Image (cartoon, rainbow over all chains, first blue to last red; front, side, top):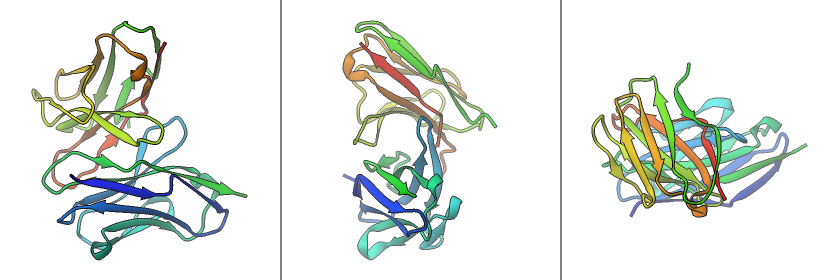
Length: 113
Length: 113
């Protein structure tokens, strides 16, 4: 069965530091991949998506993610963290033969001043 | 820009009471979904509707029923609420074509005493 693993339930960085949130998926064929962000007491907002057009995907708020088929990874990065980036981040996959999203467990990003 | 609207936003129930959570989308999307979010478990799919007139079980359907009233509306019903159903419930919709992301409402925070 398809699964998504986010390494680290909590990540803490200093303001201005690199943000790296890890996501690995299990799939025999490249799926559709997404990163969502959830701010406190809000719904999920789409950050970016991979749909095979390009391996490096740019999203909103300065985030980007790189699809690496050989590593079955889709890690999320941002060069310089801002206090407003503090939120929970979810990696999700749609296996290419279904329309259903499968979510990772989520990573809470803390940004320290 | 309403997007996906969920009502109510908060609700407290007693064990055994019934409740219907409402969801409506104004994006003319074909597919709609209900998830529950619990700490450390990401989002888990309860039920989904690939198109008007169809519904299917997701990962955790027990204790829930759904109705796809029309293309816009997809409701979730708890017939006899249990404390284990205390959670945050999210509705989402999607166009239905391959690779399209889901769009989420702001959630319903449900507590069952």
